[in-house]
Structure formats: structure tokens, C-alpha cells
Image 1: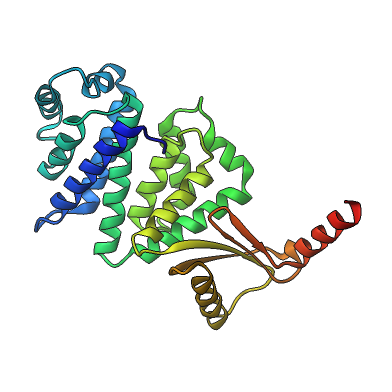
Image 2: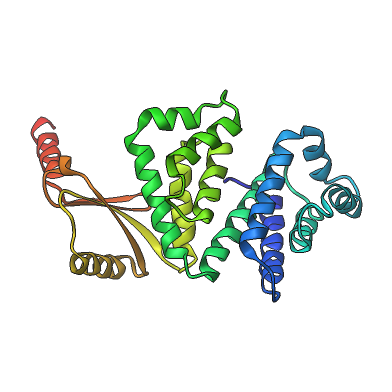
Length: 273
């Protein structure tokens, strides 16, 4: 998500309001997250409404009244309070406002997972779904097809994950499928993996291994990477026999290739260089 200065400021204010709202006793972060994402769907469909609520030249109070007139009784009071903070501020454009609400919805859902003690589970499920999409190009193409109806793509991903994942995971993935934002669905889901890890103040290490790692090996690798990057590391391991032996580790944009295939490629480059 790329935001201009005004939108970054507006989102920061809305994030603070979200924290405040969800800190109230009885607030359900997951329910608020789902409601905010439903508003994203509404604004995506209704171009005129999207422009009206993001028009920085209009009266902020009028924009709040417009949203409440449409949504009061359909979404909860906590969600309306967050939306007041969103539309009451100036955004750089309609698309960025909708992106901001989507980000808030995803954050609320991850807060719900954290509150219920399921954040690690959701993070791992998101990682596994992203890897399925990486290895199933036809599925990725179908889900990324901009001409296909969003509801059809949601149905397709539901058939894939069905009852195999936590409901929060399913909602998050369906949102990426419905609104991929110019990226592959796999990369969109991987972004959610990073957001989930960040809630525990961790960075994500994507690891390819030729063989299954034991629990002890995973712990040692996570500890070494934590020392290297000077922060806690969330380790996500994918089996890949094609690398021959060793490991390939990606943290952010940095790749540490300790695989046999990687060493052979390096040797070939040296010989042909």
C-alpha cells in the first residue's frame, strides 16, 4: 500500500482511534474488522459514494453524517467511530481512503486473533496458503483475474480453504482475493504474514529446506537469524527438494543462499564471467 503524506497522516489518526475503540470493554476486534472490510466492498462498488466521502473540500461533519446515514444500524458503534475518524480527515484520493479502511480492517482482525490467542495459528495458515498459491499457478491466475467477478473468486478460495483454517484467516484471504491491488494473491497473503508477525514485534524469515527441519534445528536457526538481524524472527519453513541440500533464507529483500543449487549457480557464474 502506497500512501501520500495526507493519507499517511489520516491513517495514523484512524489507527489511534481504532486502538482506542478496541480497547473498550466488550469491543470485538474481529467483528469490527469484518465490518470495516464490508465497507471496503461497498466503497469499491459505489464510485459516487467513494468520491463523496473522500472529498477533502467538503465539510468533514457532512461526510460523517453521510456515512452514518447509510451504515447506522448495519454496522456496530465501534466501527462507526472508526469510520468517523477516517472520513473526518483529509486523504490524498478516494483509492487511498479505501486502502486505509482495508488496512484498518486487517489490523482489527489480527488484533482479534491476538486477543483470542490464535495469532500464531493465523500467521502459519496464511503462510501455508501463500505457498499453495505459489505452487498452483492456475489457481493463482484464476484468483488474480481482474475480469472475474469478486464473488466468484471468493467462492473459489473458500472451496480451497473450506473449514481447514481459522475464520479470521479465511476472511483475510478472501479480502486479498477480492481486492488484490495490482499484486499477485500470493504476495498479498505474504504481506499479511508480515503484518501478523509484526504484531509480535517479529520479522519474517522465509526458509526453503531440502529436508524436514527438527524442532531443535528450527529453534537454532531462529536464534541465529535473530542475532544476525538483531530482532526476533518468525520462521516459516517450506520443503523444496530442488535446492539439493542446505537452506535458502529470505528476510525482507535479503536472501541467504546456502543451498547446493545456489552454490552451483554461483560457480557457473564465476566460470562464465
